[in-house]
Length: 260
Image (cartoon, rainbow, N blue to C red; front, side, top):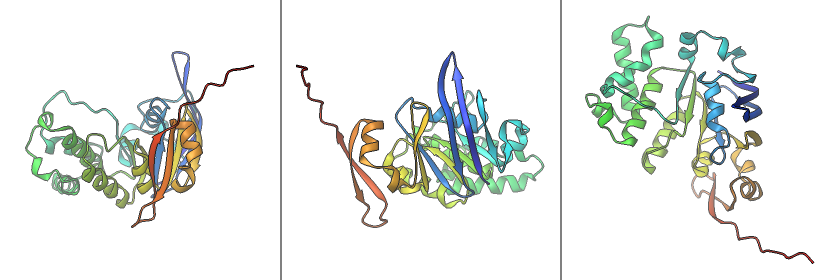
């Protein structure tokens, strides 16, 4: 399923948080959003998964305005993992994952159980099925929420910092799992090396605008990273995959030049 973001603008309290962003994720592509804190990545994603209505522009799924879709119809094709997820009641892990089946109430209970079990197995949380969600570690909670999103069986998956709280092995495992699923994925990622290794296309967001886009090796250039992130980057190639990887250090301080 193709995702198109067309000239989306978001305003709140007189401030423009996102301005005229255009973005395309073709069917099956893994598209990453990178940028400094406060650049507008999460705000843009909230427009995609219908938590926020843009002041201008439109988000389309295969040509249909996602905000004009019925909630259940949208939930059948699009799942989201927001950056912050909370639960007030201590559901078990199995119950949390089963929530992903709510848009598909016409399916049989046996089918739902099989789908949920498969999602928990894929994310390595099957052994936690009877545990209370609130008692889990941050990393365990994150994997359970990803399992819930997979149990929803969407065609488009929106992820806001999906590797939060995960150790390095689970970071690599989760992103590889998502990439191998054949879904259209739009994800905000802080770790530029993870983004470079797993994304087909990157969009760099700064000041609420998309300032660059393209393949990771084309986008993650030292001059752009210095301008957007304020760091000096040294690109190297991964010895096995050939993917661009980055080494960082601080930019040298600017030397004061007195005027004459």
